[in-house]
Image 1 (cartoon, protein in one colour):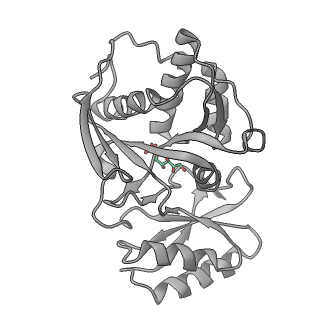
Image 2 (spheres, rainbow, N blue to C red):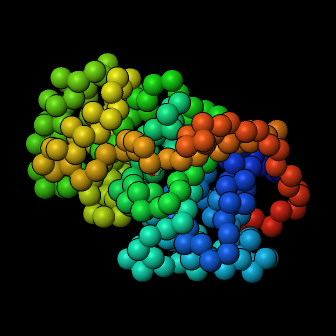
Length: 260
Ligand code: 5RP
């Protein structure tokens, strides 16, 4: 474990640390959202502060933009960057093809746009996110607020005819009110249990009027880095068809807590 980090945070931290080693001077880097991505932003900030690494970061949420600014990463918009060298983000599930479910943190729309606009997308994760079949994690679907109940009914009707074990959706809430994304939309979480054909489901969902985007990331991720609590990392590369194992060395006084 690193300092006072819990085993799960240690796993997230070593995955993040390994991914940040892939960042080179002058890169434009997509900065993901979530607790694992937050470790990456902190570790990248440390490289900027201590090594003088010169990069531009494109955040995928307001939360990540605030954290990046706090730890010293220069931030630009995607419109300024246009195209990115690398995006590093977390995921809620990944399968053997490195297809993903994302959006547990509500940032799937910006995350998908940024990842798609990147030469390479690297997912950082702890071992719990690896699954045989996607779908145990509720699939987030971002919908416009106008007529969301009709959109939800259309989604349920469409997925009922597909190879899923269940077909119910719930509106994501933030206490008493519907959750609102950075783009001003709502999220319907689909409780499917298992998704037989993720590629088809992703296409069907995006055909429904009112749906902005879904949390299935198909053929977008290039590498997954799985961190373990003992400091090991597995690196799966879908393009090379390789899996490597390494050990991350870190000092207990790693100065990654600048924002805490
Ligand atoms: C946010 C996401 C996150 O990457 C995903 O939810 C994983 O988060 P965490 O690293 O906190 O488990 O997709 O929209």
